[in-house]
Image 1: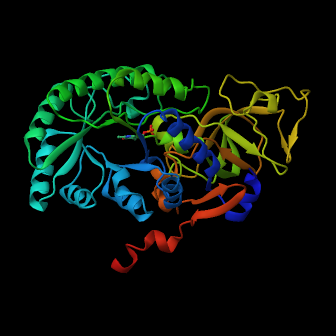
Image 2: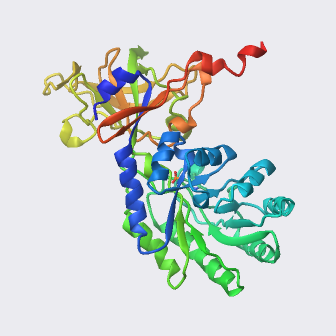
Image 3: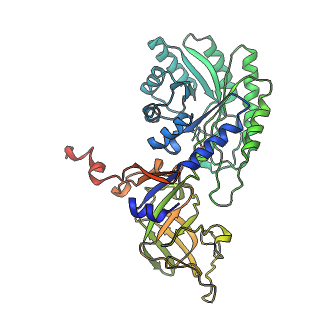
Length: 437
Ligand SMILES: *Cc1c(COP(=O)(O)O)cnc(C)c1O
């Protein structure tokens, strides 16, 4: 992909999404469950852009929403209501009412209190609610604590005993129709065994419920499939599917999954330009025009995103060992190369001479960095960097901190680029305040 010309055409900082890659990921996941009834519900929180959602909806995707805003985004792009599920640990009355009226597939409940609340609302509207309960199987997803959700100590879901009680209550209620069971143990999982363990635990409960004539039709395994940011092990989709299906033998259920990162993560890059280089007491900083308000994952989770340097010629992936002898994106000990090393030039960037640096944004926080301790060549003002695998939890987590206008977003499909979100202007940024001063 020609990042240089996209950056020239749309400016930086800029998010670019490869829609062919999104399509490929969606289809791969759909196909791996092809032998079963299945529904792939894209987790909107990972990338909420309307054009991304419309594209996925046209491919047949359903949606996992965690707020009324996300639900309205899905409906706005014409998603089928029977392919929408609504999750979240703190749904408000108005949200539950809207979801009920929208006649979506499932409302995922996360507490007894929420169930009683929904029952009252359903009664008021005289409209029984199709529900599913998020069960916390108490397995350790072995991921970052901020994105691990399957242990009893987390705020999400209810334990097995509570779930059992809730299902029995719901079965007796005129206004609750328990048709689904749900778990989601965490994000960026690189190993299938926690998911398989969870599937086993939850499917055992499902069998128990069926014996009580509680007819669960949807088995929702959540999201969480990890992607490769650095050198993580990657889940093999076939093994993932087989690991889940193993628990479901003899059960006629529709499998629902809620991938976010897996669909959009590797399909996106964040383009940012170098403003300056500086040394503080011997420590090297590359200051760029993108910041933690645009991409907060490094600051929030200590996440690593590979960095590709885009030269004036064309982007060469410097993180692929065979693309260059210098592994520019990797972390490591001081590895300043000698000047007699082969001089490689990429659009004026000398690739042979690298040194450790932090890539930081202009925001007034020490936590504002896009990469720490990475080995990069000497860079000049205007050089373009591509921060890789930024298609999920990138723009959707962005903010206006430091009164920075949010970045633009571009889609590339079959070689054609298209603006899918305009760069925010200062007027738009202050729109809700300016008449109130
Ligand atoms: C965040 C979330 C997802 C998506 O997680 P990914 O790791 O992006 O696949 C799916 N389901 C629920 C309930 C979530 O909270």
